[in-house]
Image 1 (spheres, one colour):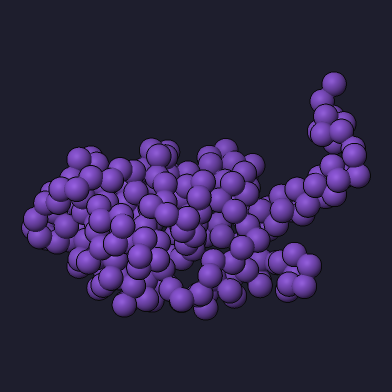
Image 2 (spheres, helix red, strand yellow):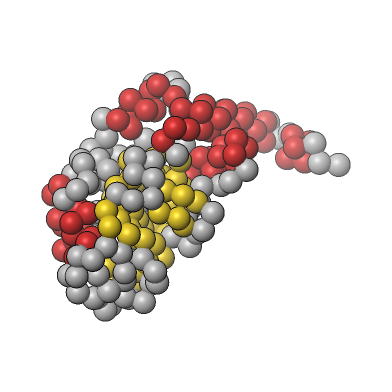
Length: 220
């Protein structure tokens, strides 16, 4: 972090609050570190299981949630126009056999200033999405899509495995996956994640001084 503003909950959250789709994700805290912080504080890791980026994307933003069937991409389009600039659209489907997100939806979301999309289900048009450089994370990629049924719900709580996502929760994604942090815990989790960053920096320094990793960890 040499030459950068010192990382703190206030500086991170200020960066987060002002983020637009054109700004890079603040690089100092990874999903791994957020997940470790959550695990220490709550016993749950906040991970959205099996969700990976279409490309080397990073995202951060407040959740706008969508719950719909995998055959209904119409509700997803409504979600794009319900989200605020800088939000992350989180879409939950009952399966990943049919895509609810693709290149055209990505184009529309990017124009709206949405930070990225997380699909607990399937996406398609990976080549087009990569060319747009619009961050999309999904559980599966398939070529087929459903119909604009508009039968789903927007801004409702989503249950993804052991993780509950509420509208306004913080969503972080990178090459390792996606983590959700409840909005009421953002500051507390940030503080713990910063401690983890600092500890890892210290460990790297000791390793570079030829200290044994086993000695650092106290492994006998």
